Length: 293
Ligand SMILES: Nc1ncnc2c1ncn2[C@@H]1O[C@H](COP(=O)(O)OP(=O)(O)OP(=O)(O)O)[C@@H](O)[C@H]1O
Image 1 (cartoon, rainbow, N blue to C red):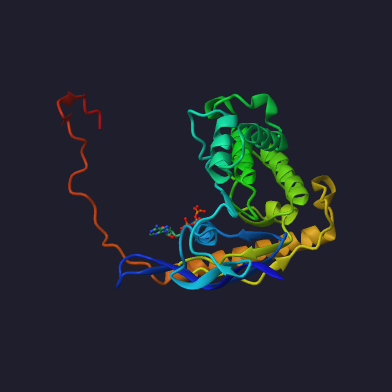
Image 2: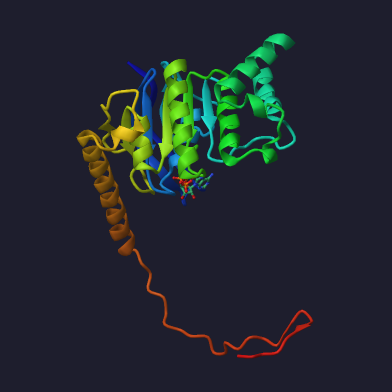
């Protein structure tokens, strides 16, 4: 049964008369505890899609529903984790998570708050770094804090907007495994945005391509039926993995080609002109130098 739904949802930006429809006629139905990966090119509208799912950006057409209710504003029931860590630099790991938890669970006692915050710090293996500030942490550690903070408010839906794309390949795979472990243990509904086919296959139950914008829409999904837990050391050798990777990659390459051809027909011819004088000036704001050109 569908838990999170997008029904003919669209997002347009710009003033009346000059509007651009970035997302058009998006339909998606995510079951409870399902892990869906949305894969797309840069600029296609992936973050706009996350903002719409979270309730930050109301659709200009159609609707978003969660557990049958229309989504009209952000709520702690939908936790978002962004590509940038968005941590408060003057607070420690503990402080960053504590702030979020206190906001969402104001009735918890001091001791309950402490126990709750420490549980999530432990979940992402950051207990030894509990009192460090963001500048004292590596990129992977910062992203772990961000994950712990998102999880600590106990959302039912996790929206992950390219959470690992700024990390090196090794850290990225460690964090993929940690997110999967947490997902299995905490049973969340996940929509993860990614631009990495391998990441999508390793993590998701279903991969949905987002076509190129403007008027980007979701294409037909690729189901991933590989058994869980998935072992990345042996997974890449499986015929199903290879077939999926080839199918999704060639689909994405096709999208890119199609978009380039469309853009090609809109190319504006520029006049063939050259500057009359291209000598470097001898003086700029009182600064003199020898013209060697
Ligand atoms: N608030 C806004 N006002 C006007 N245009 C916007 C706004 N937000 C996004 N856009 C436009 O919508 C399009 C999609 O942007 P979006 O950030 O969703 O893409 P993306 O796929 O997440 O890109 P990237 O992977 O590079 O982060 C872009 O052309 C962008 O300029």
